[in-house]
Amino acid sequence: MIWIARIAVGLVFAFSLLMGLQTFFTPEASAVTLGLGTALPDLGMNTFRADIGAFFLAAATFAGLGLFAGRTGAIYGAALLYGLALIGRILGVVMDGAPAGVETPIIIEAVLVVLLVFGARTLGRR
Image 1 (spheres, rainbow, N blue to C red):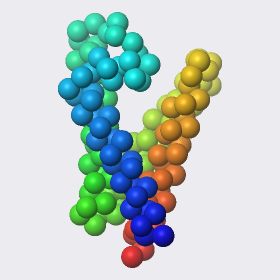
Image 2 (spheres, rainbow, N blue to C red):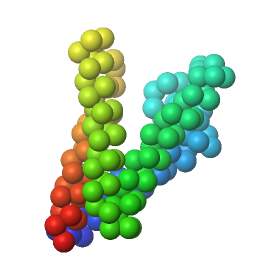
Image 3 (spheres, rainbow, N blue to C red):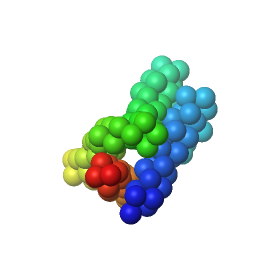
Image 4 (cartoon, rainbow, N blue to C red):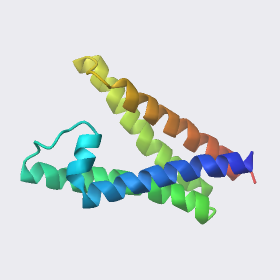
């Protein structure tokens, strides 16, 4: 079970790190990937790079601390970030209706939360 948990947290770490780096260094591509398109004004693109990049890199940092430094409680930090994003998406659906394609990020964020909580609980017991 330990190896499954390590792989689960490792996958989330890699995903978060890659998304964070993509957002920092090629925000236009990341904006398209996340459904925002490329029509962001200069300040909007700067804000996107800073805030969304920081979100993903913070999640990668928390997952990495748990995975590589043995600080398994830090994994809950990454789960909290993705959990809050999930709550925001669900709130958006409730308040504004479901935009086309919203199912995919909802499923991804829910799976990431499950993987991280599983990883934190399993790795924390060893």
